[in-house]
Image (tube, rainbow over all chains, first blue to last red):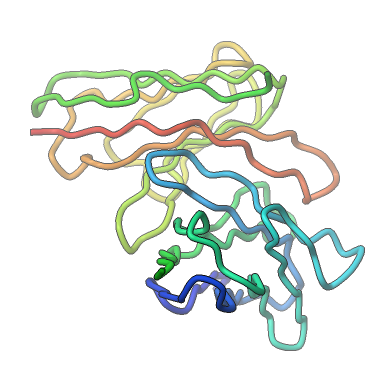
Length: 113
Length: 115
């Protein structure tokens, strides 16, 4: 079955450290891939999306994600965490032939001073 | 400003009292969708609509109804709310096209508590 998995429901890093949030999908055909961020008491905001132009995608706020077809992954990274990055992050996938977005379970990112 | 609006933002009600959560978008999007967000479960789709008068069930439709009489509006109706419908609800919209890259735009959310 087609699915999306985010490893780690909670991730905690120190300010200035590398952020790595993992997302894997299950599909024989590469889907359309998105990362959304949800700040406290707000809706979801698009961070970035994979458009097949390049495997490394740059998004807002210094985040980027790399599509690896062989690993069926689309992990989100940021070289240096900032306190304002504390939020919940969702990987979302649109499988080929579908309009629906399927969301991972979400990863709550905490930044320690 | 392009946006999706939802009302109310917060609602506390009692079991069995019918309620409607409104959703409106000003981007002329064909596709609209309702999700509920619960801890550890991510966002799950309740209902969606591909265009006016075209709606279909998502993954968790039980206890909900929707309608799409106008392109911009997509209200969510709970005819007899129960405590297990206490959740955070999001409305979203997007274009439909040959490309699958169209992102969904989300409303600010409605936090519903059913006592």
